[in-house]
Length: 421
Image (tube, rainbow, N blue to C red; front, side, top):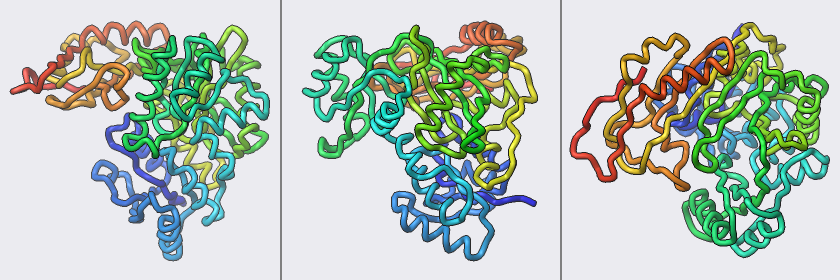
């Protein structure tokens, strides 16, 4: 018998991965969307829609209560971080399984996460919180250069590297302006963090209950040329880190330190010479199409699992595929206006290619450098193969088949049409 779930927020269609996450949830459960409007792109996946302003949690909760009095709802979930609190309150209303609200708060505030992990002595980078440029410089001098400057709440994927006092001040201003996009009074605190050296990985973690914490996959991330920029993610079903006792213990300590008792987590860390250091935890399905890579490499359906867990249903975290999958993000060569997005027909000879997607339109303005965000990506490529090296080699070859042109001024006409695949 289908068990309808309430999805809190559809998210932005332009955000890489939202349509995939919604589609996978809808494949296992009827989806009732709670949002101000049901976006056109989301409607094919929806069973119904509850209109509510998610900026007003009380009215959103009242709208769900009214719908629930007439229709069945068996769970609530979200993949939009700012709606985690509202989702937990809806689950409490429905009396359905969910992680406690207090365990989710550190997952939306990096400063709270650092304090909670410090309290439980979970390994993490040395850190401090700054409320103004002066304290940012003072904390950076104390921690030692180079240093990372990060927002604490919004746009937590943003991380700027600073090597001296001047760069710290500039990075602080850039982070606060970009995150707030408004007045100084509305700016949030900034995290000052040591730049830990080592490989960036994440544990795609499924918490079935307090005693049953499983790592479904390990994501290895390659950074781009610019600070905070992600170039690639790769997942291999036989990654040796899946059986690393130190990593597994730190993931379990992190989950228990937060008090998360149910759900799907994205636990990010740096593998330093002194051992893994936790850098962030997301209490929702990972961004960047990581759930797609997990499905391609292992057969494990994380969005379906998240939906099952929200209803209390027993779920399956057993791999059914032994492969590797990887994604490469495409970035503009310079800032300006997109004039050409094209793929050489030779790309069809790449048997491991799953898809090429352009996420910009001709004429769009894109940015490169410290001001750039994920919205400036021009597209992405997904491949699947027998192991990680074969995926990386294929991505290298495909990269040579993609032609992107960006003009510094607005184009009069497009030079070519894009050929998404």
